[in-house]
Length: 411
Image (cartoon, rainbow, N blue to C red; front, side, top):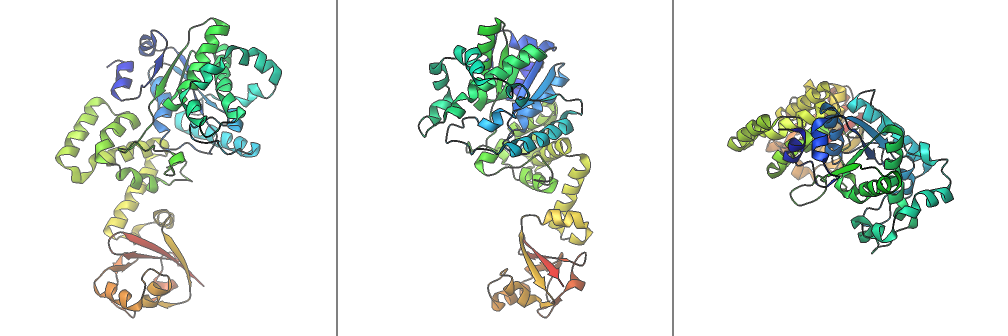
């Protein structure tokens, strides 16, 4: 397949603006850019397919610039629902620095990352209205989907003006860096085309844009932070193990689409994986492959191997094989209790609230449903203390097959 055909096969093209863009993408040599919003200090997994386009375009012979909106991030773009919360300037600047590092980690230290605050900070407001605002019709702006929807709940002049700022970004990067193509998520389509209109009117030049579909699950719910189910690309915010477990639970009905959009695997490789998945769905080979591809790319192979090791240790009960760092990683997000001194196992289960009564605790123990540090508990008189903890601190209790609790033994 040629490059554009491959992008279509992967489901990575939604909207296209500009004649002959298909040929230009196939032939290489374009300078392109994509914008990142510094509303958080990391990108999340829902944004990843759009930003993987940076790597895809590079491999196809194009130059790609990443723009982080240090200026637009202070304003906020319309979401089509309600006004964004105003960000402190210091927070936006911090987020810019973190995303800049993230982009360079993902795409190489030579990746050009721009900040639009650099050209907006000295732009006089009156001059901007005269130079840019004069050439964008209000009816055109109001008709854009996100703006139109947000008008119902109320939209501030600041967010309404966001489209002008992003349009000017394209004009500036076109004039100063030679970018003739902008791409972004499909929710940004109105902003992308505004830049095209400005360049046509003010520079009398033809430029291009395309959008990448938003990533959703089978119910149409976005995989993104605004939906409350964010998985951050920053390993300090979402560990490789958390990422691995999340991906392992992706729905079978969506997994082929995700393999196409999240990986660089070929059509033949994906077809073979899906054949095996359909014949033996219990192996979850597609989810495991997807997890490996994503985690290895955004973190590294060592992090992926550690995530697999943690997962296998928890499944087998071999918790003692984990390093302290892996153990803490494995227990991140579980109910945690601090306990002082020595406790009888029955008292510990009740005092922490893991079980509701001594009778229930004894029943669970007699049924073999309580494990401590990977070993089943069958003695109601078992004493739990620092000596029985891992790394002189941690006691991992499993209730039933999957419910884990972390007890931190204090002096």
